[in-house]
Image (cartoon, rainbow, N blue to C red; front, side):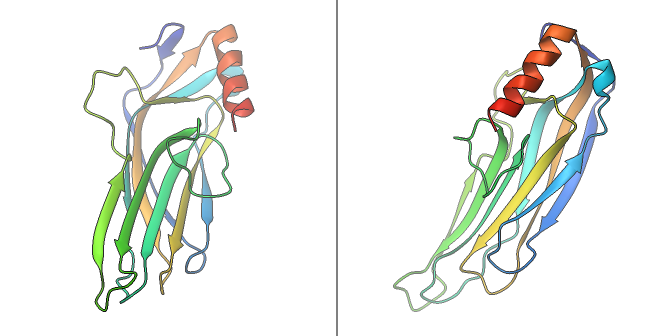
Length: 170
C-alpha cells in the first residue's frame, strides 16, 4: 500500500464493455466509481485487462480495433504515452496489398506486467473512461475489460496532490 493511503475495502472487480456507436467511430464511456471525495477516497488499480473485439479481415484493407482505459476523458483511443492511460490494446490485421484477409497482429499493454509493482494507477477523481475505435472495419466493434483494485482513503495533502495531478495532466 502506498504511503499516506489506507485501504477501506477488499479487492473489487469492475467489469465494463464499450461499443462503437458506428463502425470506425471513436466512442468513449464514463464508468462511475462512486468514490466519496468528502472522505478523500481514491481507487488504487492493481491490474487491468482489456479484450478488444477482432477487426474485420478484408482483402487488401488494413483494419484494427484500438482500446484504452484512462482516468480522464480522451478524444481518441489512448496509448501508454498518455500520462492518464491505465491500459491500452490494439488488434490489427495488415492486409494492404494482399488478395486475402492478411495477417493478424496484437499489441497489448492491457494486462498488468509481471513485476513487483505495488499498484498500476491511482484514480483520484470519481470515474474512469473506456475508449474504443475501429479503423477500416465494416461492422462496429467493442472492447470489454475489467479493473481490479481497492478503495482507499488518502490524507488531505496526498488527496489534493493526486486530484491536481490527474486533472492537470489530462
